[in-house]
Image 1 (cartoon, rainbow, N blue to C red):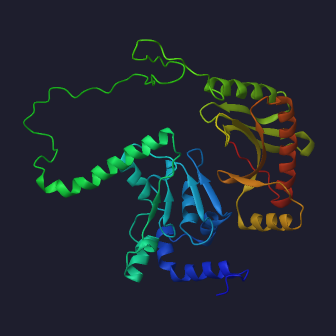
Image 2 (image 1 turned 90 degrees about the horizontal axis):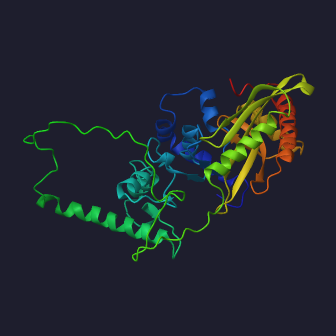
Image 3 (image 1 turned 180 degrees about the vertical axis):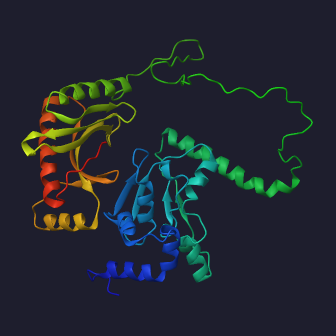
Amino acid sequence: TDENNCFYDAVKEIKTIINDYELLCAVNFPEKENQREIENKLIFQSPIKGMSGIKKNKGKVATQFRMPGYPFVLVTTDIYREGEDLHTYCQNIYHYGIAWNCSDMEQRTGRIDRINSLSNRKMINLQRKGFDEKLHVFYPYLEKTLEVNQVNKLFTSMNQFVQAFDIVDSINEDGLASTKSAIEEIPKELDIYMKSKFEHDSFKGYLDNGNTLKLNSLIGYNRTDIEECLKKINLRIQTSGQFHLEPQINFEDFKIIGDYNLQKRKYRRGPFRILIKTDIYPGKFTIEISSYLFKASTKIQKAYNENIINGIFTRRMFDIDDYHAIGQNYSMDNINIDKLTEDLLLLVNDSDEWEEKISGLDSIVFG
């Protein structure tokens, strides 16, 4: 019971699992998975997890978040708007990105607003509906920005939606399609390329007096700039060695993947990824180079932890889909592609050395 005890959180987590065992089995392991399958779902937890549309382990992260303990925070796009419940131990949700449609926002909040949610269980067990038992939904926004207009629009729509329930008995028309209407032809789907007239390259606006609006300069890079950068990097990478898989550009995800043939390491594989992504600063982009290590397993996790503890393995490891990887970042501004290529080769060789030492494997990531 001593919160200062180093085992306090671990004991608390174990007690919670025991007390909520049936609930956890129902929401996380309904198919009665075997031990190995459960380990694969829960391995490599961390205090904070991030999830977006480019990642494939959506279900695995959701399972971990539905467990007591790590992760305590889940930062995500609207990829979790539907399909996964996140309610078992979460009571607070912050909508940093909002939609104009109030039903869309309710759908997102609904991930934790469910039967048997943490809030629901508190209300039933304590038989009260105080602040500590309710869901806490926050809408952070920046003053003196467009976000003020968005939040105002959203809250107005939400209020109108709630008020509509009070007048439902007085509404005669239920909105059903009339059988008396003669439908001669169903409208065909428009087969056209939709492009916003407000895009920077095509926007033409006019003031009330008829004069054309002056367009400000772009901040950062447009899509063409990023694609050209990828082409230059790919061209240089192709001349840097031999490959099991030639470097390939994916313009949709702004990435290059490939697999070196490591001649100095008995022709082992050196799978890698180069990804251009947004930086934390507006208009800035980061180029991330990464080399794949191995798939997750209990045995490899133990070996990795031992090397970390002994100070042998010092690189930061992170997840790419079902694999663990090491990498480093560069600013896209004035990028030195030759230096990036040299660093990628060092990274791939370093990664393969540790893969062989820790797992004894030579992973085939692509193909």
